[in-house]
Image 1 (cartoon, rainbow, N blue to C red):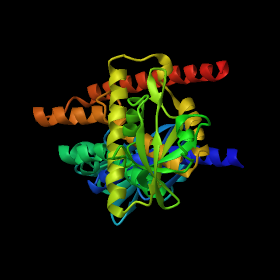
Image 2: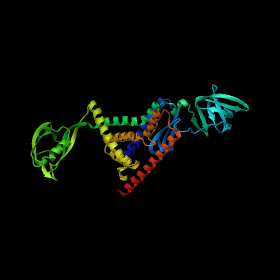
Image 3: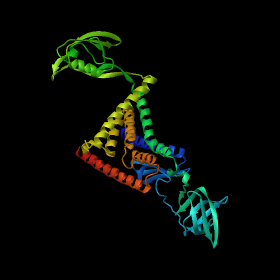
Length: 418
C-alpha cells in the first residue's frame, strides 16, 4: 500500500509541475488571442488525446516535460498550393472545411483546382470548377482535412508572430512564473503544516555526560544560557557550548510549564566543549503573517541554493555523480513521499522553484532563450530569422536530450552498483 502511495505521489508531482508550467503558457497565449494547437504533457508517442475547443490535449509516453504548440511558432504542417485539387464544404457562403483527398467521399463538397489561396490575411480561395472560376471566403476557423486529420487554419492575427513583443514575452515567461507561484503557495503551506520555530528543545540526553549529570531531560525547553536568551537559535547555543569547555554555564529551562535553573559544565572532546545533548526546535502554529513571511524566506533561501548549484554547473565545477536525471528524481521523490506529506510538499515546492529557474536560463530550447530572442527583436526593431531561431532551439533541445540520456545512464549505473 505504501508503495502504491509513493507511485501515486511521484506521478502527481510530475503531472502538477508540468501542467502548471504549460498552463501558464497556454492561458496567456489564449489571452493574447493566439491559437493554441496542442497542450501536451510529456514527449514522444501519444497515450491519450482529445480535443476541446480549438486545442488538442495530449498525454505522451515520456514523462520528461511538456509543451504548448502555438500557431505560427513552427511552419504550418499542411500547405495548399495553386494547381492542387481540393474540395470545400460551404456554410453561409463561407468555406468551413477544405478537403485534401478522398474526394469521392465528399459528396456535399465542391471540388476544383486551386487558382489562388490565402489562409492567413485575406482568407479566400479561388478555384477552377469545371472551367469556371469561383471565389469563396474562408471562415477564420475553417478546418483543413487530410487523411481524416483535421487542422484548423491560423489567420495571421491568431499566430504567435502577429502579437506584440510584450504579449509574446508574457506567454513565454508565464510558464516559469506559474512554477514560482506554485512554489510560494507550497512553501507557505508547509509553514502552516509544520508550524514556526518557538523554542530550542532537548531531543535526547546521553547518559553519563554533563547534561545528564546536571539533570537535563528529553523535552526540556532551553530559554536562556548565562542570561542570554536562546530563542530558536540552535546554532547560537551550540557555539556557546563549544566555546565553554570546563566553564560552568547557567541554563534556564522550562519543564512542564515550570522554569528551572541548572548548571552545566561542558567537557572538552575533540578540541571543543560538549554536554551530550541532541537539540531540536519546538514549533507552534503560525499566524497568517508568519505563514507568508516564513514561506517567502524559505523560497528565498532555496533560490540562493539553486542558483549556487546552477552556477557550478555553468562553470563546470561538478562531477557526473553530482547530476541527477529522471531516475534520481524519482528515487528522491519516493524518499520524500515516505517521510510524510509535509516533507513531500516541501520537496514539490523545491522542484517547482527549480523548474521555473532552470527554464529561465538563456540556453537554447528553454524559455529563457526564447525571451532572449524577443529581447533582440525589441532592440533591433525586427525579429530574428525564424528559421535560424528554430535551428538554435533544435540544437539546444538535442543537447538537453543527450545530457538527459547521459545522466539517466549514470543514475542507472549508480543503482546497479548500489
